[in-house]
Amino acid sequence: MLVPLCWLVLVVGPLEITGTLVKKYICACPQPPRLLSICEYSMMNNSQISPVVATAFVGLASLFGIFFTKLYRARSYVRDLRGRGWPVAPNHSFFFGHLLYLKKHVDKSPPEAHYLYPISDIYLETSRKRELSIWILTQTNPHTCSQRPESLPEFFKPIAGGPNLFDMPESDWKAWRGVFNRGFNTEHCQSLVPGMVKQTLVFRETMREHARKGDIFYLDTTTLRFMIDMIGETILQIHWIAPTGFNPFASFNLVRGFIHWWNSRKMNLYIGEEVDRRYLEYKIDTEKKRSRAVIDLVLQTYLENDTGKTHEKLDPDFRAFAIRQIRLFVYVGHDTTSSTICYCIHLLSKNADALAKLRAEHNAILGEDIEAVSSTIIEQPQLLNDLTYTNAIIIETLRFFPPANGVRQGSRLTHILDDTGNSCPTDRAMIWVGHMQMQTAPKYWVRPLEFLPER
Image 1 (tube, rainbow, N blue to C red):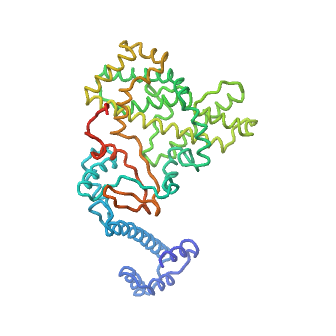
Image 2 (cartoon, one colour):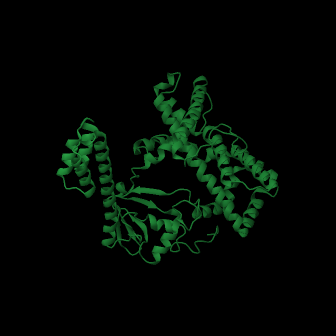
Image 3 (cartoon, rainbow, N blue to C red):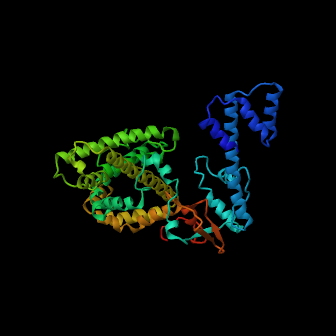
């Protein structure tokens, strides 16, 4: 009853609603002691409740009512699952859910560690007790099970700025996926090798300078700037100097939510200028060599299929669409690759045998003259395909530290089987695929916590 009254006061009814009306309504309903005391106080003083006070009171009461209703439904859902024998993590609290249980494991991790890392410990702890051991996803409805979470567009909005290749409808996704696929075939990737080698040499000099100084520095920041420069070379075909100086994305930070808008604005302005400049080049020189960089693939598709090619400026809607797709490619490539480089260096520093084998393979295939390696790779990029042990090191690193994971929307038609064959419903839930946990699970891997590229 409080929700309709809240709408009456805040939306439909005027603010001049009298305190007497609110007082009579509240006093006529079964009410907790706090509401009675307010009414009694008003009657004892023979005065009316202020309209502002009444409005604020009803609004707060409605918010509390909605909050506790949702809290009760969420907690009852988990308790109902446990009551029916479904596998549920232990120490569930009505008020805090599993937050206190998660905190116990988070406290064991380093202060800066992501809160999802302790999930591995939780799995190992609960699987021994046979309380929670869910791995196999049974798809009873392929269409339903392939549905992305409803929250995905909201998650990617600060990253891409709006609808993009990750969250667009399937029909649109297929068309644009076909366009972007042309930029990732083997022939085109090999044509990018000279530019990649050039950026890698800059990164090498940066690392050598730190080695000469013997200083302490953030490896993640260094590799991140390296990848931003690499992306500028391959996605936008522009040359930044991120490892040694300032670039437009140097202060780009997705963690601080309160500056998302500012970061988004800066990225849109910079990428928009590049899109406009490249579009003008195509307008002036229609015979220009067709590049397969992402920014060029977008513009080529526009010029081939849109009547806007006769305009001096890009269609505003398409321009905004192009900026979002380019932003997505800038984001998805820079953090995942840079963090993987960090983890590779970390694991090699802890495993001398693997490092020795890596160097031996490089000497055998690329030659022992370090200064000549770059020219060798540029002249014969196919040699990179022969670095099988190097590739194995990267794969083993990704087993320990997967840079991303998958989430699917649960439904009444989707259920999960645990190791003992019990079925767990997924209605009102999201299905999170714990890659890190599965890839270090003793059930699926021999010596799972050892770094073994040979596997």
